[in-house]
Length: 233
Image (cartoon, rainbow, N blue to C red; front, side, top):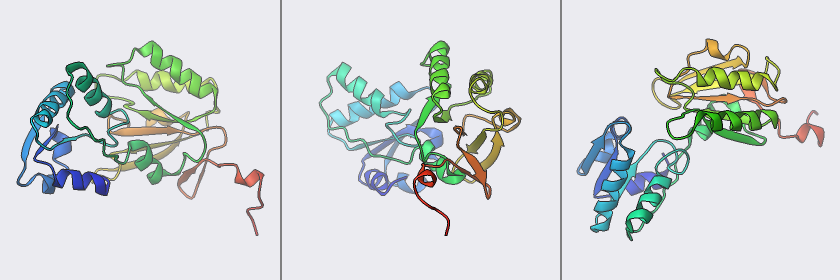
């Protein structure tokens, strides 16, 4: 959470969010009207938040990570546009999973990278596969969001097969689950063996490019300084 997000919560009249996320910020909920709902209720949360704001109340709509990355910001604007709400909407930046997980792994995103979600709830699987093929062939470091759930287990296998068409089986892979939380786990592995690791919905999978390597239990992608400057004494 950024300081700006904390201040927004403190100054709000109403806090709306997914129940699991609200449980992470109990100190900010004291003295507030709190509206919590379950997963898959994003549209309802956005609608309620906009209606409260339209009535002049200061509303904080909580999501995980950064609201503008695979989260709620876009939906809020879409619904405001469709329903002609004219309340003020401010997007407060947060720490996205791609940032938090990269920091835990070391420095995997020092060169060009892409993020791809494997959730086909809102995006057709064929389009996901097309995007995976594009970023794999272009040698991007890739952060994979929503890699696996209890019901959705094949997409991560498909992703691995696509990357193996273009990359060495020994390509470094970092997997961070529940970054910064009490149940955080970090695994360093290879493209060949990544499916042997525990991967779930709270995981972010970082697949290195052709230059990425592991050193001192950290995943590193060179920026290119070594080819331009003398780094040793």
